[in-house]
Image (cartoon, rainbow, N blue to C red):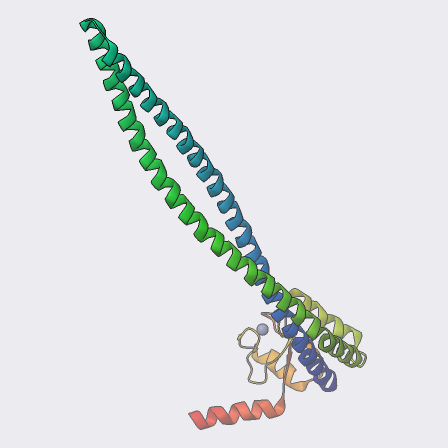
Length: 248
Ligand SMILES: [Zn+2]
């Protein structure tokens, strides 16, 4: 079993190296995907802002037309006022001129407000457009880099896989199956040292009886807590022991 465990540890070293290579590329790809989602959100915001800004611009155009009409109305009423001969018509036309004047002032105020709203909207839109374009460029660049990284590790991953397969040939099927099962459950180590009497995978102390059995190295032992395969290394145990003695 000692030999089997040694091979298993060797196998794990290779598998973990392969996993690390893959995880790095995966993590970078995840970041690109998250950024792409952000980009999409930004685009939606930009679209709705543009739509609402266009509404405001349209409203502004209408108000300008309204203003022209009010001014024309005022002018027209003034012409009529100058030509009037009786006092009753005069009073009515005077009111009419006053009303148009009020309307002109009111619409002018509205136009002023709309103009500043449009200016602010244009500014915000330009800022968001800039952000969008910067993020777009960044994503394009990152995506290219991730693709290149994925391509560049391909050979290395393949070589490690070949090595892993080669070592696996020497390991008993049931040992290998146990190892692969644990590996499939979670990333990271599936075979861990318990040379100090504690599982280094989950840091739980082994039962004294279980530790005695482990030290015999006759059987495949698993941590009762985390189910990882545990091994005992005599040299490591001695080193740990000495370290402890020195400290105390
Ligand atoms: Zn454990």
